[in-house]
Amino acid sequence: MSSWAPHLPSSLQPILQPCLPELRRRVPRPRPWLSPRDNGTDSVGSKRADVKCARASQKSPDDYHATLRALNSRGRKPRKSLGQHYMLNSEINDQLAGAANVGEGDVVLEIGPGTGSLTNVLISSGATVLAVEKDPYMAALVEERFADTGRLKVVEEDFVKCHIGSHISLLLESLRDSGAKPRFAKVVSNIPFNISKDVVKQLLPMGDIFSEVVLLLQEETAVRLVGSSARTSEYRPINLFVNFYSDPEYKFDVPRSSFFPQPNVDAAVVTFKLKKSADYPAVCSTKSFFSLVVNSAFNGKRKMLRNTLQHICTPLEIETALQHVGLPATSRPEELTLDDFVKLHNLLVRP
Image 1 (cartoon, helix red, strand yellow):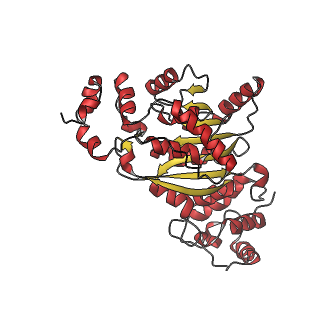
Image 2 (spheres, rainbow, N blue to C red):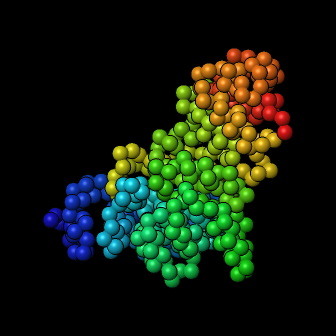
Image 3 (cartoon, rainbow, N blue to C red):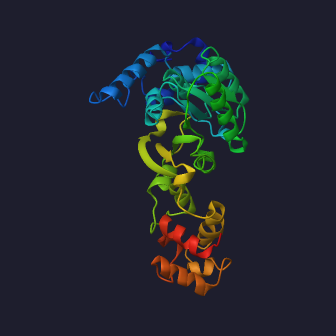
């Protein structure tokens, strides 16, 4: 083995031997923890960054060595069926926590903690973490790793099927009973790419519980969620959904070389500032807005709305409503903004 290999514990040989050429080529060396918010200009921000740096100096290193060592300790390898790609670049985890401004007293939901590299950053920043992990081996590993902190609750469930609102509400209530004063929770997660859409649909309508959601997504998905707007080819109902419930922002790119095993695509981090229910666009029913109008409209994307919405009312009534909104009678769904759809819904659907 090369001179690079002796730095690795001998116990890692079985799992590392096939991976050494790839890791040697692409994995960045760990660098000191830096707060992305500490720019030296804001005294309050600087103080908070100093606290974070102090905490970071106390946490154990969490790079590719630690990740592979944790996997090897359980005899585990990443499972493709669960979309497991473990973060190897500790700086990305720091930036994820920084994007949500995680600090002392925060309550953070993490989906798929894996070996706990992001969990480590969140807890070291002063947060209490609710981790939802489907893989029982990883759930046991991360629970054991942070057992002494008193800042981690692990739920061994499939996130897509679990009642996350109940879990987070119970945790918030428990913390308040103990004297803490958390108002809202946050979500910070490096999620499996194959459940991205399900996660977004489940979390974004929960603005009365979560203040913001920070997700590491497949880059293409991130661009579509944030960048697609009316009159573009990628405009879909999910774009209306995202903007109905949140204010999204594309934050930064994450190269595929940051993961083990390396996926075939790059990633990106997106933040969603969630709206409270009182701040949603004014519709008589969110269910009818999305199911009766938006989704039905896009079932025939290239068809005119006067044809795709005939299950609600007559073509003539639809044309009249479009004209009241200030749109042509021949409008198609990809031509309408969120505000246009809200106005059209309120004209076509009676409370």
